[in-house]
Amino acid sequence: MTDLLLPCWYRAVEVPGPREQKALFGACQTLLATLQGTLTVNTYMAAGRYYAILFSLDETSPPEHEQKRIEAAFAPYTPFLRLDETFLDALVRARLSKEPEIAAETRHGRIHVSRKQRPITFTDPAQIELSEEERVQRQQSWIATIEALLAEGRPFVEIFKMTFAAEQIVVGSPLVQHADPLKAAMFRQMLEHAQLWLWTDSARKMCQDLARVDEDLCLRKGWTTPEAQLAHYNQLSQDLFRAEQRLWIEFDEPQPSPHGRVRAVFVYPRYPEQELNEVLDPHEDPIKWFQAHQILGQEASRWNIDVIGENASVALRLSYDTHYACWVLLEEQHMSEVFAWIRWLALVTGMLHKRYARTAATPEFPDHVMSYQAKEQVPRVRGKGKPKDKWVTQRKTYIKVAYDLSEKPSIVHMEDERPQKRQNWLTQAHPEDLIYEQRVIDTFTRSYPRRKDGTRREGGVTVKHSEPKWIPLLRPELRKHQVIKKAVASAYETSPVLPIQEAPDAHQPMQAPSVSENTEESRDPLC
Image (cartoon, rainbow, N blue to C red; front, side, top):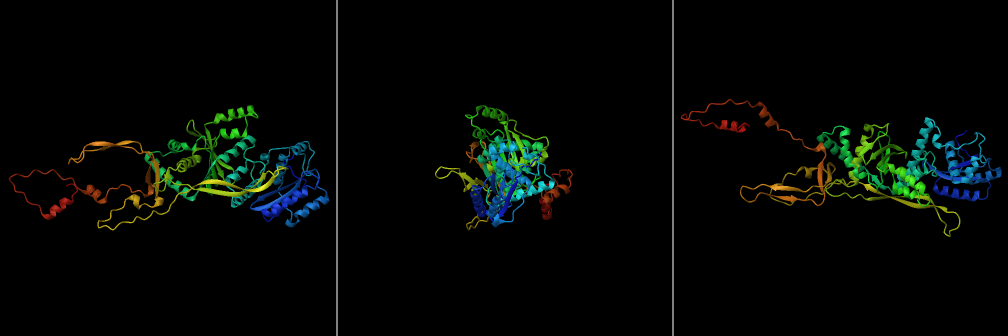
């Protein structure tokens, strides 16, 4: 039994651009209306190039005169291309999935049995075995396609969503993420509801500075092992797992990691109640709706964190249990492999909730709108006939995580006869050396002692901070460490212990010491 569904006849060409591709598609649609047989025309893009293909699903090839008419339409863009069998198989399966009657006839053997293949059976495309060279070539082609889509302005979140839709066929694309249509539909809905964040270069630098400050804190606290630091990071990342939010954090450039080049991180619940209610209607099938809630509801406290590579596949998946406040690792995972991402998520949580800044003010993250062209089916003007395909402008709004690292405004000093005071460490520090952390200051009582001159009585005052306060933090490598001055230290180390001298006689006159002796005594730190 064969694993591939192949057309008995096809013609494929490369066209210069999207305008020619659209014109050729329209000409083929008009031509197909006058031809007999089951023929399909498809357009696609790969590695920044545009292609068109027309293939037949009949048992035999079209008549010779019809072949000449089809080849005449493709003539301006010859030569004809020879496509990979796996890609042809994907095109045929996409066509069959849209036509139930054609698929039913195929199962009964009434449509297309290739002369080079044995009888056809329906198998899962994920079971197709590829050689290592073919797998690498397929991945490289898919990455090139992603880069071309990104260059056209399509957001990466939309490219990732394509892997959950079987009808989106792109050459070299990996197999669909979820074979279960229900889970794939819920995942697409979660991506639609996700809050989109764009991670910039200044955000990466801010996160690196926060990591150094956090490492210094852990050393001072005595937390030297990952297990000892987990409670600290779990407390910092509590706001990351809220029932109403799904977070998509996309990097402006792929970031290197032990799991490959990473493009985005997606945080979502394993029990998406809102999306499940949108996919399943309780009025249509209440039993299925109830069973789905009952099964998925068992993991209501679990959250997934997917680390997505540049090839739009999940490179690493983490799981967190909010009920037990702990991370759940798979059997093949080890804490040393995922600890870097756990610490990164803890720091990112505070950054997204604006608890850290470069100045003593809440940072403002601007909106970043990405627009792109997409083909959609729209109803006709007069409401008759099938919906037509039309290119429409789609927009995705990201929250751009960026920190202003511009220089501080210069302070103008008034002319004064008094000598200028020495600036403190906060005034001398550069903007990139400072991090401001927003802290909630508890109410406390400040006590005042009584002055001897009677100008102030003993008492106290209660201090309340109605709003959080911004506390400046300096990078650990720029802090000054407390040291003992060499002069004082050497004096203590070399000074001999003086013997106890007898008290002088009261009747014996005392000699006044010379000026040099007084000078030496004043220098002696033991005096």
